[in-house]
Image (cartoon, rainbow, N blue to C red; front, side, top):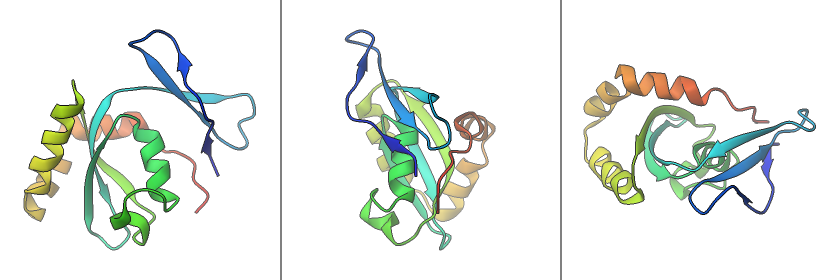
Length: 130
């Protein structure tokens, strides 16, 4: 199972990066810049979960290992289906609240937007041992 090591690698006071260590990739780490993301997951039972984070790969790992939100704990594995980047934490949180108010049909239309699909593809697949 992939894991995060404790501690931050400081580049400056503004730019921070977390390092994800993946088994089988000895000496290789995936560095992730800290940004503000609003995301939507599709759970194994077909429901959607919406949240925000500043480290999307770490959050996906947490959801799929049962340590994410209470809602996704028994509904794994989850799949990232929507992703949006915001300038600030507050903007990401507002967007999360707005998305949660949408109907299922409106959420599915949002998921199919070209911009979201491109961002989800950029994140790529993360190896999980499920």
